[in-house]
Image 1 (cartoon, rainbow, N blue to C red):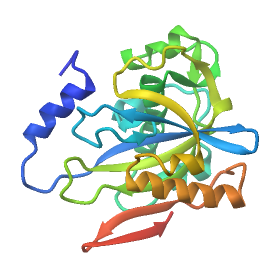
Image 2 (image 1 turned 90 degrees about the horizontal axis):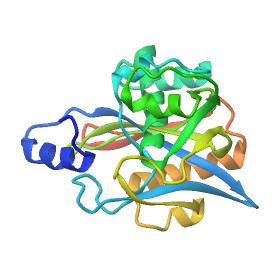
Image 3 (image 1 turned 45 degrees about the vertical axis):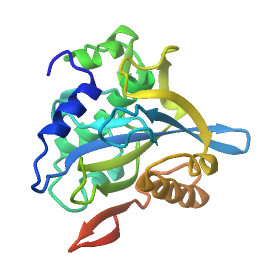
Image 4 (image 1 turned 180 degrees about the horizontal axis):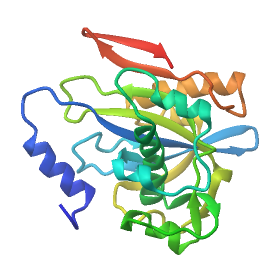
Length: 244
């Protein structure tokens, strides 16, 4: 599928889906936070209507995890408490897999929003997806990432993902490209106060995660490492909420 857009891949995969159960695929999304006056704003974008998965919805930048991302050299690794959180929960998550999940959130935020998270310094890209970091002299950094929530798409959906919702601060962005990211995944990008973001057309799980984020920020405004992160999934046809 080289040279195809994500929308084209979506359409092909949607036609290929059979009636049987789908195994959730690892995915990561990034909640980028910015303090403006007395409000906290989050970065969101609207998905194209032609996408098979959540068309027209406002979402955070994110997408599927590429296991090869685990080999990307970083300026700083995950905080040990965040590393442990990413490895916790149902299913076996190795250290390399946790690292790939975190790095995919950074890569997708560049691809969809043009935000390069990291530290200024020389960087050698091993893959084309990371070349912009080398071109702009940014070394990806994971130290500022925090796990906010994890959610697995219920069975029977067009797509199923095991998504980790991570957060970072606007100050973690080393370079912001004026034209946004190079993909056509999101039609528009907006900074919204959290209360307003909960009222726009967003997936229900996104609204739930924003509510969890509000509660956590009320107790921990700086989002210290190792804070509680809920894990949403379906067990024996019942939704459960566990804490990681």
